[in-house]
Amino acid sequence: MPEKRVVLKNCGIIDPEDIVSYIANDGFNALDKVLKEMAPAEVIEEINDSGLRGRGGAGFPTGLKWGFASKAEGDEKYVICNADEGEVGTFKDRYTLEGDPFTPIEAIAIASYAVGASKAYIYLRAEYHHLFDLLEGAIKQAGERGFLERSGFAVDIEIYEGAGAYICGEETALIESIEGKRGDSRPRPPFPPSEGLWGKPTIVSNLETLMNVPRIILEGAEWFSRMGTEQSKGTKVFSVSGDVGKPGVYELLMGSSLRELVEGLALAENTKMVQVGGASGRIVPYENMDTSLSFETVLGAGGVIVFNESRDVIEMVRKNAEFFEEESCGKCFPCREGTKRMSEILTRFSQGNGSKRELEFLEDLSETMMLTSLCGLGQAAPNSVVDTLKYYRGEYEARIQEARTPTVVVS
Image 1 (cartoon, one colour):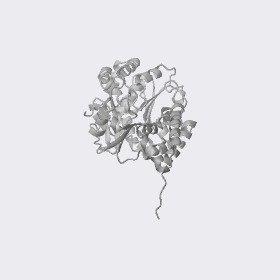
Image 2 (image 1 turned 90 degrees about the vertical axis):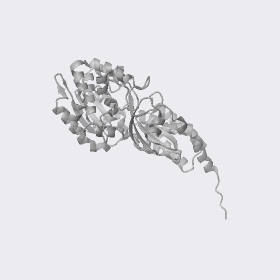
Image 3 (image 1 turned 30 degrees about the horizontal axis):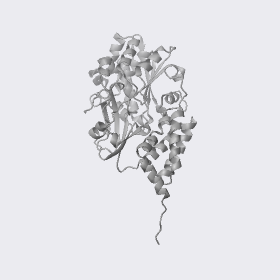
Image 4 (image 1 turned 60 degrees about the horizontal axis):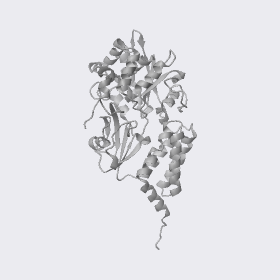
């Protein structure tokens, strides 16, 4: 199946430094339509009817989130575009912003109008500092053309750069960061749409989510909802890396098979397994390569990492655990201690010193972290452990056998 470009439709087509080329490709027509023809409630209804769900991994219905914020009490509200993209193996947002910095601005303006916000932020990953001037220039051009301030509507968009913390991809930690605090997750409830940035109603939407908004407004909710599956509408952007012949960024209809992406587009061969969703994603063994990519099955934030037959399963999982131990904010006990213990056990297995008892402990620890961690980092950190124990348990047991086998020295 060929790519279906909705989010990436302007990438490689427009000049990302010149708003004129964006306007020539229907740029800001959706915002014009919204401001001239639609009430805020009608905008939210259109997004809700489209079936658009958050592309950051959780998949929460976008229209529902906007509706909560619009109904929340308070004259001061905020919209935040999450362009932190700290997930391992994910680089789709970088590609998107490099090719089209204008669509996010138009989408932020539409979202701000819909929920009644006059201030918005683009939370930019620290490693994407090279995109700061491009985005700033796009915001400036949109302001000079009068797109961000009309009769009865105005929004001020500011770029806020993160400091490189993985945890700040989680919406409440991101909010803490913008407030100038350490990027730790907040207990929920309250949820951001009712009490977010500085205690005010706040919408935090992933960059890819927002990229769909202008097209939905122009083409209609029915157009968007015809694409994809029953519960996963539209398209999904993936960044594919690892053991592939053609790594890169691809956009496919929701429900397309993993095989189409990995073998058909990225040209993978001799695949052993694929991790869908970055380091926190699920492991799909080769025999399940025909699995569809959707919220109903396996999806994540869009990072797809391919491992061929030469790869060591346990070493891959150990590196994941090491990463999560490093990136845990340490606020909650299950994640702080769980990631450390997990890393220690997997290191022993990697060195051939694991035990059967520790296999059972890994399973219990994973379940506890998934059920009791404060945020998605701790809840998702055990995913690769759980899945490899399910599909590649023999490799763990082989390490135990190796540790038990005595070395015979022949003189």
